Image (cartoon, rainbow, N blue to C red):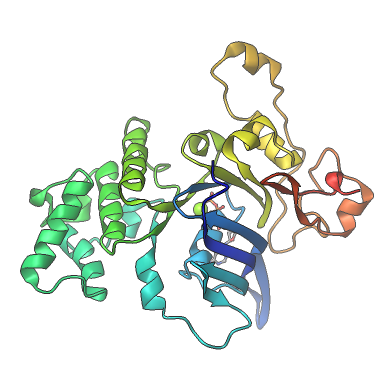
Length: 330
Ligand SMILES: Nc1ncnc2c1ncn2[C@@H]1O[C@H](COP(=O)(O)OP(=O)(O)OP(=O)(O)O)[C@@H](O)[C@H]1O
Ligand SMILES: [Mg+2]
């Protein structure tokens, strides 16, 4: 299904460490994203899942350089957006237009002192997308219309809206610059269950309409399964598995992916009874001092001596299905 699609975003050995102070003049690092490599294909939805704190937001923001990566490479349509070996800086204004983000918490991501028209208009102004005030206004109204709001909403402030409407404003702001690629960072997890599907449907319609590419971040697999072409699973800053959605669902390879899947509710009671829920031992280790070797070894039911020593390589184990696990090395 996705094999013939072209790569749009190529991520190579991406790393993001946050410096933190641990005492007077003492500094250490949160190793939030460690050596992550994968590609996102043109027009696809790539679902990114993993427990809270595993680095999904950090990875999403580092890809679009909302966070400055620590090292590695990110290519967009073949051109470098970030390259730790290249001194020349890319034209970030250009990429800020191509790549957008929709945030998890819509209320926190909208400036409370700005009207809806100004929030959307700001992006139009930065990228000089309107010749005059009239055109700017018309664009704002068209964007509001696209996300199911209308001209009466333009002069209101974010606090006057419900969570779902605020997320629609956030989506209109992202769309204002006519992007090609959008990082959707848990765009529905802060919303009422009753309106979550409305927002997901809208994102899907927009994708069908203008051929957008999504990196769709979520906590659990049940949210991303239906909307993603492919899925990536993260654990403690590492990408541990990538494959086609159905393949990840039917045939997860990495022990951590199996655990995540075992926690997804299944509608069929027979299947549900047959599927054993795997409960992991112990706590997630700290990303300040992650375990050596495979970061998952302290909780993995299948850990071998090698797992404590060497980080496993990310390998294509089956066609278009990648995992990083010593169980599969010969
Ligand atoms: N600005 C920062 N400074 C220091 N540490 C940070 C910063 N942002 C994130 N972290 C740490 O990096 C790790 C990854 O955080 P991140 O927010 O990317 O995880 P996440 O997978 O998006 O979690 P969630 O599902 O809760 O949104 C966490 O340990 C977090 O505490
Ligand atoms: Mg997050």
